[in-house]
Image 1 (cartoon, one colour):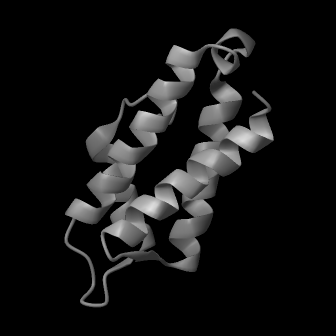
Image 2: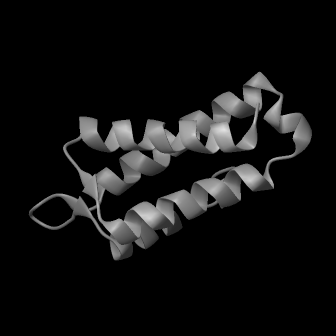
Image 3: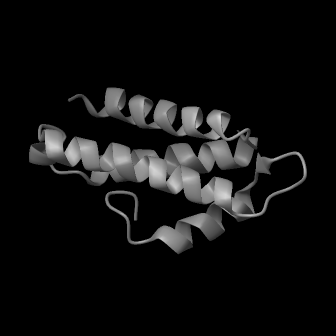
Length: 99
């Protein structure tokens, strides 16, 4: 699979998870999510980018990260902000390939 396409797919999966749970990302958190996804996909080996099991695991793990963000207490407007994002990331690491 093409890395750029996979990054977009993972970002879309994550955004769908947020929407399903009634959350939106702040601009900063959106940028941070893109950076984590980009770094995670770039960390994947060539073989992993062509292995259905590895791709499925990355898809599953971006959902885990997104759900963890939704589980953390956020502002009353249900906006996931930068500090919430950092907290969630520390709670799930190490989760391949994102940390």
